[in-house]
Image (tube, rainbow, N blue to C red; front, top):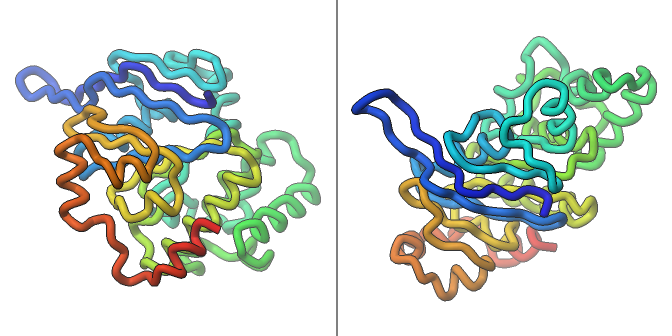
Length: 265
């Protein structure tokens, strides 16, 4: 397994107001696999991902990455982990420095690893091409790109050091439905070609068949169902999952079936 989380517990607040947001959460993802993490807002899915990415400490539980326990990793060792684990956020334009060009932000990890200027320039151009953007985007600032273009640039930045794991936290929720389909198709292709693992956090069940192999459904800080996407969709066992499906969240009324099929190809 690339990443394995065991018994994650997390609470926020103090005294009588202290609230447990994760209660014994387990999940794992292998190389080349995409695990969907779904549930309504407040179910704990984003907190679980931030703990997995070591942006938050768990109160209890264990995180292993490529077979190594990173639950309490700090300092230099944690920086090495971040080279192989990258997170892509919901609002890509907010994750870029508005004073720097997109090319500079994409190249920053290479600069920290001692890459020379010409090699950095070549790598940035190749990454932009990989995500469907022209090399001219390297000299643009975040405000000069659309939301979809910024998200593609964020994916390019995440791929800079060829990570083993991508953590995508609601990466399509701020995009219109056509751009969503394009970004999901891009991510799926990258996962297949590079054999990277992916944790894909979303509240939108409709995206699951287009991106995920397996799914974990969360509710009230707990995992209430998990399994292969098609099995969960067709034979949901948890009343909560059944409720989500019955709410008709699973349809994409504005995307033709052909387009949905293209996302998987």
